[in-house]
Length: 398
Image (cartoon, rainbow, N blue to C red; front, side, top):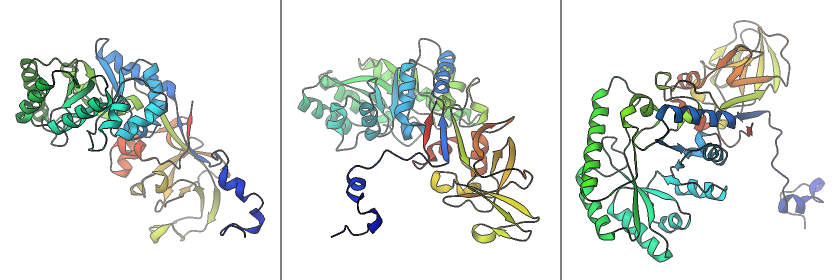
């Protein structure tokens, strides 16, 4: 009996196809290009800014902000980053399985079922409760492992993760009872809620003062954490006095800031996004384009079909504002961005043909579409753009 769902013309190869699939296809004419030499250069820019005595914890969570976590991690570690930061235990395991042996700090805390994995994979969790410490201490004891380095997060005003300063005493009491048998307080950290807001000096000052007070309390208890860290990409630009022992850049390493006003000078964008024209439509004036017919052509038009859409992370919210580069010229995206394709007005470029390269992010000719433009068109932040490019978009590394 033929397997259900397999057509007769494929029956001879069906077993092979099901058991031993071919290597991943690379025929899709849409891709992101990642320049790992630019990642290395950006790490150097950050390192030069913070100075040789300040370590760099390179943030590679969310698949390296869409650049590929393992590839980015190798680039950063080889270039001298002290370690890497992820959000999830699973992300840390992915790095270990990708051959990364540098310190990996897990920013997202300690899920109840994760303690044994953290110890086995030698990850360095961020903790903020006695419950975290007890779970991890028990896992270290079960494994007969060396004391586990952890980083204590203090909530000085972000109101997200971390312990409140008033609860610091309970954690310090637990650490005193443990006496370093299972837990090594390697680091203490906080996170600034308004680091990229130049108009909110007071919030930042309050958080930094609160953190300094907590460091004093920790030192008074006899604990001597070796790594104190506060600054993300924006904060390391704006608060040189808060670099402490280590900084945690994310978006800066990939070539941008949370906004252009807090971008560190000398950075370059490591990612560019490209596609190739899939088809050309000759459409008369008066025709409405895409879902909802929100755009009506005012002239006879040549419309290029570009095989990228919100299913690839090209935000639908950019509809009516987005542009792409063809032959170095800006062309408007017409109508609603769909899941798989966009329509692009190339009427003023009458010689454009199927197969020509289109640049969605990056430089083509003398023009460039940068990350801030995409974020503005989508009414979001630059982080969301690169993180949002989906697994459907092949990454090509240079």
